[in-house]
Length: 334
Image (cartoon, rainbow, N blue to C red; front, top):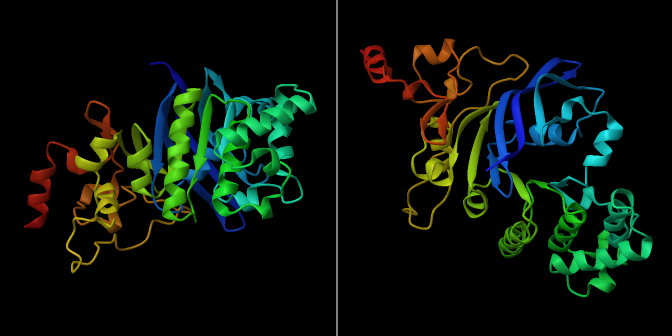
């Protein structure tokens, strides 16, 4: 299957008063047509920065694209001008943001916010754009769409605002939909409805999806492949089965152990990942997970492991996967 998006060796930094924050450090991944992938990791690992780099939404006053490329249908988005990106945003690549209350314009009616992209990108008349907006509200399962398009965001519940945000993002039938924490702050029932809606729309519109979340339960429900990020780097990637049942990186294993499960002993406490992520003002020379890893060796402190193939699509960046790791660990334990 053909790749619609390829992120290659992406490095993104922020220039601050305190120095340079190296937020994304050599990220690589691809997205195929009609595929859904998930990017997971704790807060501050670089998930949202990577997504906003694709859309070129990072503040130009402080953000710096140090190296790498983002190829959308063979064209490098990092080489595009702002005017060229305006033709792509919302038209060929749509995005659902974390908080629909602050992402939607509180002074504009929901219908006008859906119509805006249709009139700009597809040159529809106002009446045709209004009809399409009503159809989009129907598509995202909003009741009484003819009435709702004339209401403001504050008149919608959290789940309804999220549906409206999806309608805005999908109005022009983009080839890629980036969903950044689309179920944050929603109750479990509404969360399930939103995920089911996104899966249904993916099937109907053949849209490729990049789902960014820290919720591994959402990932298991939605995607084909998973990318695990830590301290601005990809530390493991593979199919859902690879990540959930055959994980090879200690950080991924730690994430899975920290999730409550229905079949677990309730008297047994959850097993958290102790410690904190490294300071990205001065990233460590070796493995960024070294200080929090129970299996760390001396080589982990001094040398950052490369992302190596474990099996098929499964890749992990961990020295424990090296053929000589067991012997080295045994030697250090003496």
